[in-house]
Length: 126
Image 1 (cartoon, rainbow, N blue to C red):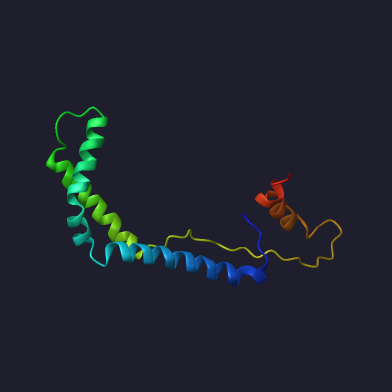
Image 2: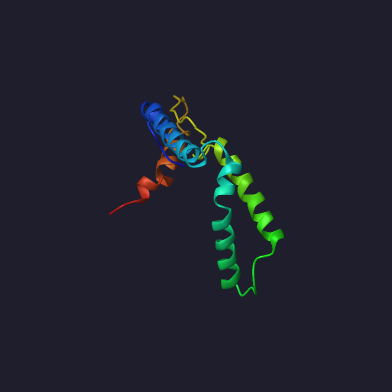
């Protein structure tokens, strides 16, 4: 949990959107909108990399074609999901406010104090 003043929320969200948009543009530029063409262009390099890893793990000969096919299907699916993915984590917000309570046995400071005490900022002492 991290504390943030309400006035900084719009700036924070616009920065999150900017970073996500940058990630989407990188993926879009890399794939040029065609995952299958991207995969075809890199097929030989992928097979070569798989064979190197296979040999490093003690495999004899070449990686079986069935393994290459599964690796390509997995990579193709991951790339398609990346085209529409949100690169930033999902957030949830909790509002902390003080309520005026006419009871000497109740303190309105408990939740804000606990929140600030558990914040990484409060633990980062020199």
